Image (cartoon, rainbow, N blue to C red; front, side):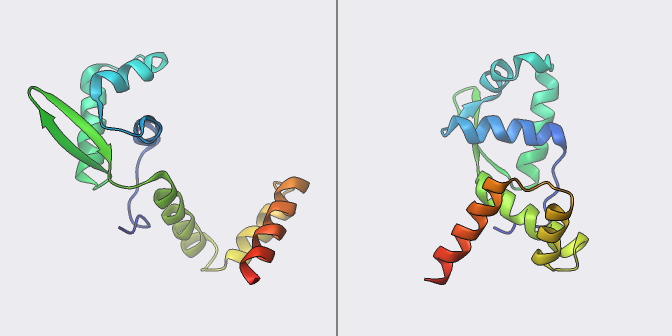
Length: 125
């Protein structure tokens, strides 16, 4: 599933992070417990879950009276799609321009640069 065209709000992303970290089907009540510091109402969580399901990010399964949620899209797939979207829309399709932008702003640490070099060296083998 391509996630380039899926846009989720910051609050939805927080819900997705909880679901990704759970690694197994999870209930809205458990999500609420794990996001306790947010102090979100049950209805807010339910609305966010419904939106994520509509966008194709979640699978839902009813077990008795309880609904369980599972990520349909992995964190890696979502990040990849969003990165491709960023490169396409903001950098005219040039990954190089993105990296140059990060380097020019001193966003990349020496360790980041080493990891990138190692990554590309391994891909050329």
